[in-house]
Length: 264
Image 1: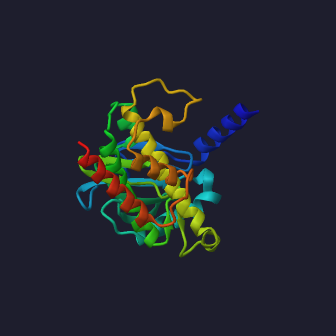
Image 2: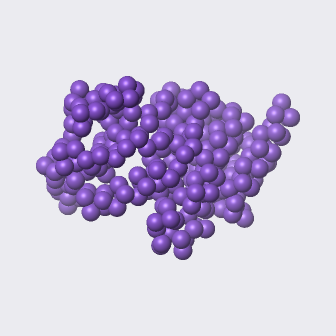
């Protein structure tokens, strides 16, 4: 039954969702260079902006998911309009073309952390991991100040390029300005983001782990970490008293980096 359901869903997508081809131009402005992602809720293109003479990213919402996407489109674009941070790609415009809904974002250089870890086999020291997560946490502090909670901080949604870090994909984010239900769960939404930061940090730390990973062994036994880093992880992952304020995470990470620098 699951296979039949999947085949029906795919057939519906092919009928309802028009995917544009490389070299086609959207709305007379955005020439498609590549298809970056063909997701369940949208198609993401790398385009050349003929008006601004620069690269950009264009997201097309799927008609086959119209019920969910009408709200998602409004929510994500409203959030992107609200945010102005160097670590978050800026919204350029929203538009409709041939009955399809799109929005355009700033293109930023970088490879996502998932590809960095698993394709290029990049290894990070404990200090480097903390420095990366400090940059990510600073972005999370900023969006929380703006009453936005990301809800999907994962290694595919973080881009790295030289010393720069960008957080992308606000498709599952919550905006307290427009979401009354989210206001009732503000603390939980914050803790969910903090948990995701902890999970993200663990992925980075395991990049330099050379042993055999066993399901029966916890990370506390497999990874040899500074006690301060272990303490931060336990709080982020809610094993110990969880963090309530983003700034406290930043302060602890800064202290851990200083301790590691002093010990080498």
